[in-house]
Length: 493
Ligand code: NAP
Image (cartoon, rainbow, N blue to C red; front, side):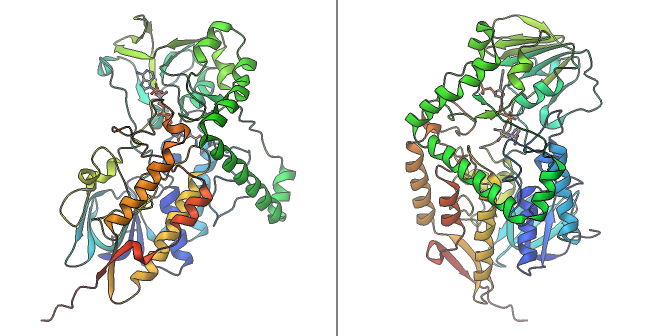
């Protein structure tokens, strides 16, 4: 895009899954007056950023694809990161989104102008205005480094999994990996065969369950391409399977029973009793994100790997100190330490009707109506906002419901007398209270610490119910839950 338009009806921020899905949906609705602002020079979101060896989806691809763009050609049950990135880039051509993309354009600030009833955006490539702002920056966009003394003193290469340094040759090197979350369990088997020594600093052992990944043969893919009904049936059965898992997570006693069965994975794959004890999770299954892997435990049993319980406590110029006080030498440090997932860093850049930023309004505990709109921020739609994450299924199903909400809101905004929609504070409060009440009974509040919980201990990341319930609740636009701002009076000369 050579120049930014001066004004658009809809400005979408972020060209990851959610941003592109919004663009596709608007196109399908015949809405042509929109722009997608993306700070990077390529679309893809987390799948552009996370290029570490072994990066892959942990929800089966049949369910981790857009409803509008089914792909019968996934090469594996769980596609790798590169293949997902290619799928996302392919969407641009398939849905002719190119003319709407403003790549290399970072949103610096967005202010709601009450008089003009529109958003005023400042970007790294100039200013524009928009009637509606869709924030789709991704919930896992800002890497989190651990707060360790000496972090800056390390003399070798040190980088986060989401900022993988491809120029560093790991062959034969002593590599320290800090963290044992979803990224770590993929990167560890991804690099273990070629490094000299891998020291894994584990603070809290995670639940790891079988993934059963496998390549899909050309014959299967041909069948899926030729008979869409088979593909749909497979997607439907996966949906039901994941919903059943969600049901377990909503019932702590069921989760405990399931934990006994799924704990066999560790017993089967790790024979050494001491290592098995180190890796055994002591929280209830699902309380922290359940990880899927067939090759993580086997990698940890290899002679070039050591697991240090208690995590890393200090970084020194030549190595990392574990909780046991011992410094183990390292040539390279990999931080698999996650993201600012409940802080929503983009919120600092959005200024609402009363002059406060969304970050200030949210404080330590972000809340939104239907996880999507926020009182005081007219015509703002936050995709994958508070309480829209999942611990049991594909988040794309959630983003699609939020986009339906947006599309239904836009139909209201077509009315000449309505300039903006804003959730009523009491409707938002009632929604949040309902979410919190449902959350009470779930495994996520069963007593473990996790990145799902914000500073106040509230689960701000996840939706506590099933995906179907979310889609039914969030998809429609209920006028009674919104304040409709009248159109500004025309200015006469
Ligand atoms: P994460 O789940 O937040 O894990 C961060 C890890 O760093 C935790 O194990 C944490 O330990 C550990 N840590 C922090 N400081 C430490 C220290 N001083 N010593 C040792 N360990 C330390 O981050 P992530 O693995 O990047 O995953 C984040 C989310 O990204 C996932 O839950 C998932 O939603 C998404 N993801 C998805 C896929 C996929 O396949 N689709 C792949 C990767 C990531 P504690 O547990 O003790 O805090």
